[in-house]
Length: 104
Image 1: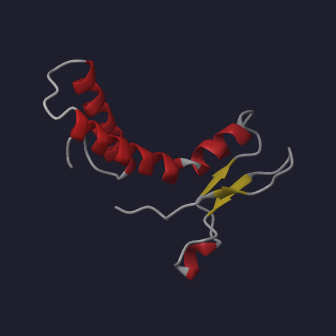
Image 2: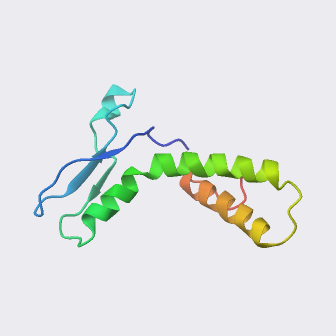
Protein backbone atom coordinates (compact mmCIF):
# COMPACT_ATOMS: atom_id res chain seq x y z
CA UNK A 1 0.00 0.00 0.00
CA UNK A 2 1.33 3.43 -0.93
CA UNK A 3 0.27 6.68 0.62
CA UNK A 4 -0.17 10.02 -1.12
CA UNK A 5 3.31 11.56 -1.35
CA UNK A 6 4.08 14.56 0.82
CA UNK A 7 4.28 17.22 1.72
CA UNK A 8 0.89 17.27 3.34
CA UNK A 9 -0.31 20.70 4.39
CA UNK A 10 -3.02 21.65 6.87
CA UNK A 11 -5.29 24.40 5.62
CA UNK A 12 -5.96 27.49 7.68
CA UNK A 13 -9.04 27.20 9.82
CA UNK A 14 -10.91 29.38 12.22
CA UNK A 15 -11.94 28.03 15.59
CA UNK A 16 -15.35 27.13 14.13
CA UNK A 17 -14.10 25.24 11.07
CA UNK A 18 -12.60 21.80 10.36
CA UNK A 19 -8.94 21.66 9.35
CA UNK A 20 -8.48 19.99 5.97
CA UNK A 21 -5.12 18.39 5.11
CA UNK A 22 -4.16 18.34 1.41
CA UNK A 23 -1.19 17.31 -0.74
CA UNK A 24 -0.74 20.20 -3.19
CA UNK A 25 2.30 18.65 -4.90
CA UNK A 26 0.62 15.31 -5.64
CA UNK A 27 1.31 14.30 -9.25
CA UNK A 28 -2.13 12.68 -9.63
CA UNK A 29 -4.26 15.68 -10.57
CA UNK A 30 -7.44 13.98 -9.36
CA UNK A 31 -5.99 13.69 -5.85
CA UNK A 32 -4.14 16.99 -5.68
CA UNK A 33 -6.83 19.01 -3.96
CA UNK A 34 -8.94 16.27 -2.44
CA UNK A 35 -8.58 16.12 1.33
CA UNK A 36 -6.26 13.51 2.80
CA UNK A 37 -7.73 14.04 6.23
CA UNK A 38 -10.09 16.28 8.11
CA UNK A 39 -9.69 17.22 11.76
CA UNK A 40 -13.06 18.00 13.29
CA UNK A 41 -13.69 21.58 14.42
CA UNK A 42 -14.94 20.52 17.85
CA UNK A 43 -11.76 18.67 18.84
CA UNK A 44 -9.84 20.69 21.42
CA UNK A 45 -6.44 19.63 20.02
CA UNK A 46 -7.35 20.07 16.36
CA UNK A 47 -4.36 22.27 15.44
CA UNK A 48 -1.82 19.93 17.06
CA UNK A 49 -3.49 16.88 15.50
CA UNK A 50 -3.48 18.52 12.06
CA UNK A 51 0.24 19.27 12.37
CA UNK A 52 0.98 15.67 13.41
CA UNK A 53 -1.06 14.22 10.53
CA UNK A 54 0.65 16.62 8.11
CA UNK A 55 4.08 15.42 9.26
CA UNK A 56 3.27 11.74 8.62
CA UNK A 57 5.03 11.34 5.25
CA UNK A 58 8.24 12.94 6.53
CA UNK A 59 8.09 10.97 9.79
CA UNK A 60 7.76 7.69 7.89
CA UNK A 61 10.64 8.59 5.56
CA UNK A 62 12.89 9.53 8.49
CA UNK A 63 12.00 6.33 10.35
CA UNK A 64 12.83 4.21 7.29
CA UNK A 65 16.21 5.96 7.00
CA UNK A 66 16.86 5.50 10.72
CA UNK A 67 16.09 1.80 10.41
CA UNK A 68 18.72 1.46 7.66
CA UNK A 69 21.31 3.31 9.75
CA UNK A 70 20.58 1.16 12.81
CA UNK A 71 20.86 -2.05 10.80
CA UNK A 72 24.17 -0.87 9.31
CA UNK A 73 25.74 0.18 12.64
CA UNK A 74 24.23 -2.53 14.85
CA UNK A 75 23.90 -5.58 12.57
CA UNK A 76 24.46 -8.14 15.31
CA UNK A 77 22.27 -6.62 18.01
CA UNK A 78 21.29 -9.18 20.58
CA UNK A 79 17.99 -9.20 22.44
CA UNK A 80 18.56 -5.92 24.16
CA UNK A 81 17.29 -2.38 24.14
CA UNK A 82 18.61 -1.99 20.57
CA UNK A 83 16.83 -5.14 19.37
CA UNK A 84 13.57 -3.94 20.88
CA UNK A 85 14.06 -0.61 19.10
CA UNK A 86 14.51 -2.43 15.77
CA UNK A 87 11.28 -4.35 16.34
CA UNK A 88 9.42 -1.20 17.32
CA UNK A 89 10.68 0.69 14.25
CA UNK A 90 9.75 -2.22 11.99
CA UNK A 91 6.28 -2.52 13.55
CA UNK A 92 5.60 1.22 13.14
CA UNK A 93 6.71 1.22 9.50
CA UNK A 94 4.52 -1.83 8.84
CA UNK A 95 1.56 -0.11 10.48
CA UNK A 96 2.09 3.02 8.37
CA UNK A 97 2.29 0.89 5.21
CA UNK A 98 -0.81 -1.15 6.08
CA UNK A 99 1.13 -4.38 6.63
CA UNK A 100 0.97 -6.82 9.51
CA UNK A 101 3.62 -6.95 12.21
CA UNK A 102 6.95 -8.37 10.96
CA UNK A 103 5.59 -8.63 7.40
CA UNK A 104 8.39 -6.72 5.64
